[in-house]
Image 1 (spheres, rainbow, N blue to C red):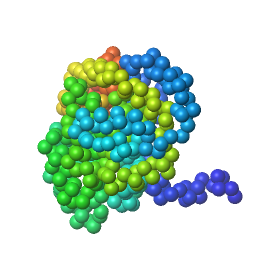
Image 2 (tube, rainbow, N blue to C red):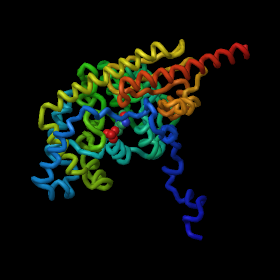
Image 3 (tube, rainbow, N blue to C red):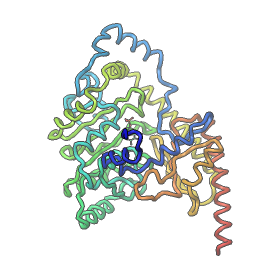
Image 4 (cartoon, protein in one colour):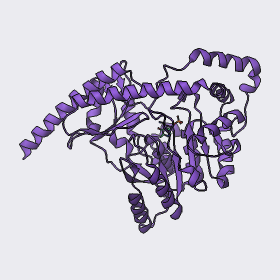
Length: 416
Ligand code: PMP
């Protein structure tokens, strides 16, 4: 019988890393939310409406007419030198000193994360991650059969003592503690910053315990007031993989990000990237480099910071009016995300489909943990919807959760 006719045996042919992968909750929610007019607090997609499209179109035309055969040819596996120079200038804003040769341009930071996991992670290795953490990042590590162990956060980010405790527990259980995956700025999904003091402390703990640091930083330049915090990498260059991205601050459609690995691992990243990608697209890199050549791009970034601040403000103002008593959320100072905790007994995962029926979607908190936590939590992305949509969507959500809180309270009374 042809293999394709026998689904069960096809399942058996899958690689272990695919067969054992957890189905993605986020993908299920996104599928259900594919209907016209839905207000999405689920997408971590940047708002692109203020980009200078005419200017970009002119640059795109110039690039092709000046030297099309180079732009559309294969290129350097590490990425074009002009873009790597820009990347070094950008990283300097966060205290990172690197030369263009140190940097590897990738197809988004997602590919860079995949490279790092492919190079460094063995099945059953433990990767520590903030609780909660970016589902797509954790999926990369679990895709290479790592185990995620969550480490609690507070308002100052990952708690160093909890990291130490988690490392000790993992060691005691005989498992290999391999590395820490952290998003230190405007964390996805928590919206929290790792404090400057803790960056050092967390780095020291990793170094002293032989752990690698996967420092994922797509949002660092998106503080509402433009302030940046120093990266972890400069103090711990020998153990840190630093990941950057142009997706959130410029445009994800270009699919351009980068990784700065420790010098000793650099050739592995170049070779492995070559195996998976050959090279990042030359044309996209040239377009982006040309955009970055004009310092006006920074004014644009400022404009975006203000747009996101306005959206964030509209969201929290509305939530304050509409959410049931006992709901709490944090106050991020940048980035795209707000983390909401509902009163006990309200199940954000169960309610998301009803919310979609009413025309609004969010991501349930459970998507951001690998251990089933987060049922009364959710992530709200305020980046993409307009201010009016944010007000309308939050009000609709508030009605749903208020009704759910009412029936949860009624059930409690009846049960008690
Ligand atoms: N890391 C984090 C924390 C993210 O939020 C995202 C996108 N949502 C990525 C990495 C991947 O981004 P990209 O591949 O577009 O650079």
